[in-house]
Length: 258
Image (tube, rainbow, N blue to C red; front, side):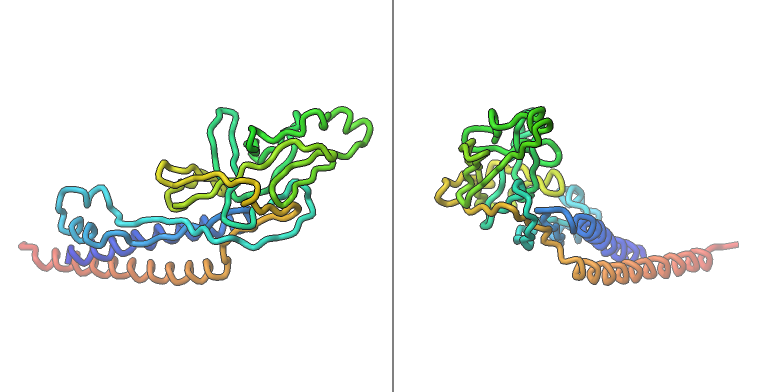
């Protein structure tokens, strides 16, 4: 009877993990460039060993769940914003924070900083082949405000950036051979591990689209259906535990000697 309790519990833990992952996917359904997560049971042998309380690696793998990222592209949406960009193939934008840490992202929603750099919404700098992309002398926040000037930024299909018709840099686009070796550090940013196989694309192999954004690849309807099914399974497991607990309690009462 104790075994049934542990069996039901081991079945509920993966369901709870899946519910948490689905909830996070749904919360990011409107996040540009977001890649949904999925869960799988990675090692049934470890689960069985852990059920029998066998010491060793099984304890470290409890619960025996793995998570992977679905890197399929989301739908492209036209925005008309000159700093909204899409990499039309499987490439990634390169970003860098103030500490010099590098990140990869499919979120192409950018803006101009006060010093003329093109940055992401969280302040990470968009990297070019020769360093951070900046409009440099073509940008002056005070003059722009006082003279009502408009900064005309054009980015062609090869990722070349022009500000007021002056070439200011070329986007650095990365290709990843083993995307599952990347670690998600936020809704849309990734850090590549050593075995991810990151390479940089030349301008001839880059395909960028200006004025568009890639949406999340989350199918909100499918996620809702999966969540309802998991909730029902979780409730069934809870009932099994409750029933076995009641039966165990009655068995203990019958076994008492007065």
